[in-house]
Image (cartoon, rainbow, N blue to C red; front, side):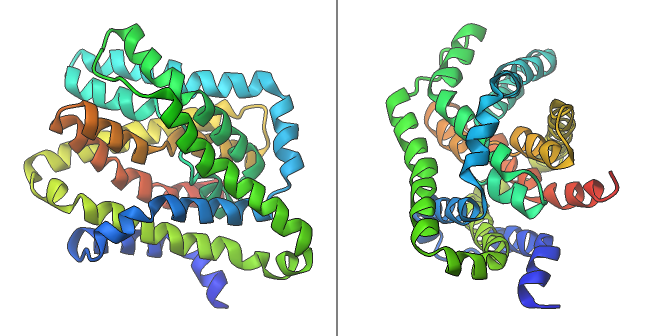
Length: 301
C-alpha cells in the first residue's frame, strides 16, 4: 500500500494523533493558530482542483433544495435545540444555539472528499450558508431575545468570502494553465488535506489546552452531551439529503454536522461568558472524531 493510500484509508489515525498531541504536547501554537486561515484556503484549493466548478453552479440551480438545507441548518435545527435544552439549562442552550447556528465549516468540502461524498454539493452548502451567516446569526439571536451578540456583518462576510472564493478562483486559473500536472497529481490531494487537517486539529486543541484540562469536573458530562448533539446533527443532515444519492447524502450530513466552530469560538470569546466558550471549545472533540465512525457506517449503507 502506497503512503497516500495509507493516509486516506487510515485518516482517523492522523486526526486523533493531532487531537491528543495538541492536548498534551502543544508547541508553536501561536504560529500555527495564525496560519489556520491559510491552511483552510490551501485545503479548499486542493478540493476545488478536484471539483468540476460547473457542477457547483449546476447544484445552485436547484435553489429549492439549497434553501431547504440552509433554513434547516441555520434556523430550524438551532431553534429546536435551544428550546429543548433551555428547559434544563439556559446557558447550555445558548451555547448550543451559537454552535449550531454557524455556517458549514470551510473545511467541509475537504471532509466530504475524504469520505467520498459530493464535493460540489458540499461547496454549495459552504458558500450559501457562509454568505447569509453575517445576517442570519445576529437575526436568530435577536428573534429569540438574546442581545449579547453584535457582529459586524461586513467584516464577517468579507472574511468568509476571501477564504472561500479566492481558492476557487486560483484553482480555475491553475486548472486552465496546468491541466496535465493537475491530472497527474490529483490523487495526492486528499492525503495532503488529511495531513493539513491533522495540523489544524493539533493547533486548535493546543491553543485551548489549559481551558480543557483545567476543568476536568465539567469535561465528561459536557463531552457526552456534545456527542449526542453531533450524532443527532449527522442524522438530521443525512435525512436532509433524501432526494440525493449516497454521495449527496454524505455532503448534506457533513454540511449539517461539521459547522464552522472556529467562528463560534471567536464569537463566544468576544461576546459570551467563559462557560459558553468552554462548551464551544469542547465541540472540537466530536467535530474531529465522529468522521471516523461516520465513514465506517457509510460503507454499509
